[in-house]
Image (cartoon, rainbow over all chains, first blue to last red; front, side, top):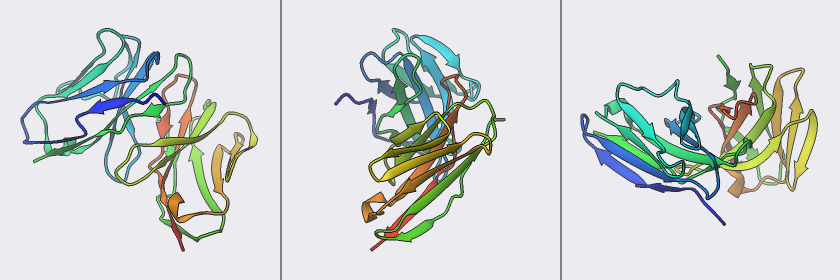
Length: 113
Length: 110
């Protein structure tokens, strides 16, 4: 069964350092989402891509976060510089074009010290 | 602002009982509703989606939707200890951008 791949699975970094997360959606899925989930809360959308275009990044802290999906397939989310409050699970999800059912990857757990 | 509200719990039920999880949403134009299960430290896994008023059954799970009351629920029959997890409700208004609730923690004790 096809799955969303994410790496790394865990990342420990010091504040002010740069971190990057990678996501490879299910093959053929046009829509890709990046979420941040803080412990005890629901996932919060950071950015949504349709193919290579950003559909919504209104909740992305653009002073430190950036996301790209250059060829409309895999995607990278970057944080620079990382802050203590960025410690969370970063989830990637994908869905087929014009469908709302999302398939989540295993997530990247980030700890900022 | 679109909101999806869930009681954080924990909801504790004995094995074999029916667990009832509830969710309300604020955006009246929401059309699609989803229930995800999330085990501790893992990513969400889709359980059910529902789009029309009424009930939708899948095995031990039944989703219920009442758009007039802006209310969605998930019933789990014959609850098992393996059902112990956090259940996330999500609502989408057709923009393919769902809003998630904070989840309800369910504990099924033997």
